Length: 287
Image (tube, helix red, strand yellow):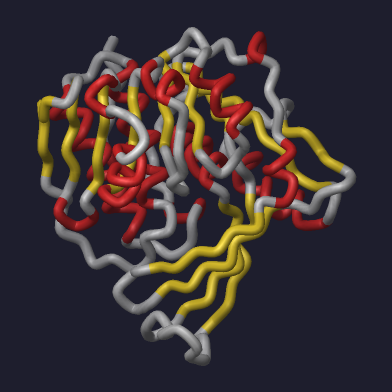
């Protein structure tokens, strides 16, 4: 059971996909064909995942996104609707399909992901609509809505995935940047990340670190778990850390909760079905 909506208001500017997930013994080598044990269809998309993750942690969430008018749209939005995410700002686009992702997951929980953005590539956002305590965005949508989200007045958060160059002035205005080690390297090649207020860098099973203006202020080991699917672990981490820091939780406690959220997510199959609840990571909001 999710907690009552007693947390902050969160606006997520991001992507909605329907994931086609193939379970395989191991990831194939280039040019190799493997037989999947199973193939399932699961709601996903980094924006949608983070919106649902925040809602399950007790936040009041509005998603700003775009989907097609095809049958996949309803399927992709099902868990968001059931989870209490406000979908009034999700646009239906006639001339583009709902985004899709093809995902392979091996027995160790490692993944490969290929995304067709579809309607996500058409997303635009009215800046005046982004009135929330936390504004969170991802790089599965175009530069314009990302920049709009980062210019909002709330606690602004960018999960810079999938990695691509981001304008330095956009990064400089952030309150929190969430990346894995590879994404950090890709961004650092184009911008001075020591200028960003806070940067969280995940290192998989090795845990995560939080830097403020380039100085490491917290480092937390990831809880040991039996990983089965790491698809949405980073999304759960980002949502949990953003909410905790925005509501006054200290750096180390916030990072601990985020690592716990990511680790729990990796123990379950599928993107959105795997996201933990408020009670599971024990995150009481500051009163």
